[in-house]
Amino acid sequence: VGEDIIPDGDNTRDLGSKSKEFKNLYIDGVAHIDSLAGTTLTAPIRTLYRQVTAMKTTTLDAQSTDVFEFNISKPVTVDLITPLFAGQEITIMNIGAGAITITRTSKGKQTSIYGSGNLTINQHQAYKFVCSSNQLWYVIS
Image (tube, rainbow, N blue to C red; front, side):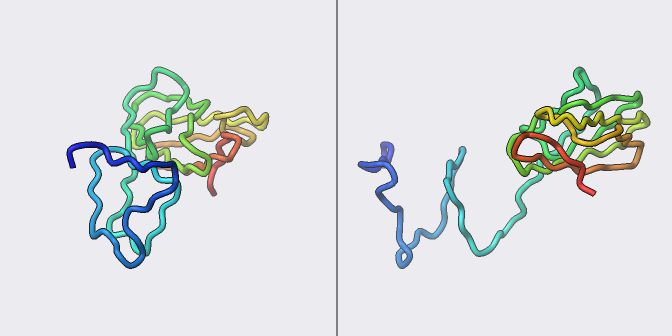
C-alpha cells in the first residue's frame, strides 16, 4: 500500500474479524487505542526508570517515569509530583548518602503528597506512591 488507509467514517469499519484475524501487528510509533483486550501478555510492559543525580526544583516529573532512583550525596526535598494519569504508581528509592525529604500536606493541593508530617527516605530505602483522580499523591503502605 502506497498511501494512508483511512475508513470512510469514524468508528465504522473493522480490520479483520473474529473468524478472520490478522496474525501479527507491527507498529513503529504510537498506537492510539480506546480499549485493549487480550488473553495473554507475552512480555512485561517496561517500567520507566530514571536515575536522579541532581535536583534543580522540588517537583518530580512523573509524566515519563515510574521509578526514580536517587543517587545524591546531599539532602534533597520533593514537594510536588506531576502525574501522567490517575491511578499511576511511582517508586522513589534512595541509593545515595543524602536523605530525601518528602513534604506532605493535608490541604489537598493538586500534585502534592497527602498526609501529615514529612517523610524521610534514607539511603537504601524506598517508598511507593499512587495518584488519585484529583492528582493528589498517597503513600502506599
